[in-house]
Image (cartoon, rainbow, N blue to C red):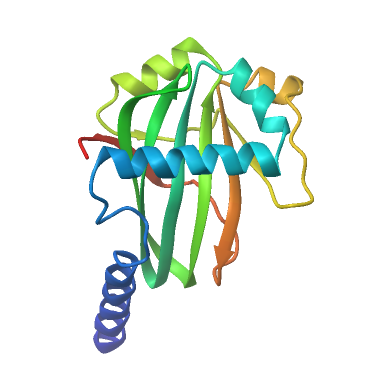
Length: 185
């Protein structure tokens, strides 16, 4: 049994190491590259999911994570970098890190944007040294056929998480267990 645990741990470490080479911003050259990816991601999101424009207009800020790569085999992890935008300007940079253990196999990449709908939610996020999503987050998983509308559900949620552009061999993108930390690129 210990051999299986060691083997599982080693496979998890290999998978986590492979994530570093997946173009997720780990080796990016700084803020200019992150800003470019954020701008492309926002443009793509608005083009593919026009309802997000109204959501952005109603929000106090957006945390844009252009590419998060997650994967694992028993043990897993994920990472991405992005920017917090207030009034269409970058004010801070953040990383998103994820670690997990359990029944999982595969790799996935996706983009996501957190829309901070209240000043209090934004203040809590910016004041924390490391922030994880709580139970008061409304999720919207979008594919090409989905349309997001800024309805009463999204209007009254302090944070709305929009997940889109999913690709990979791992089912079910989720933001549970991701910790956001302010970085200096």
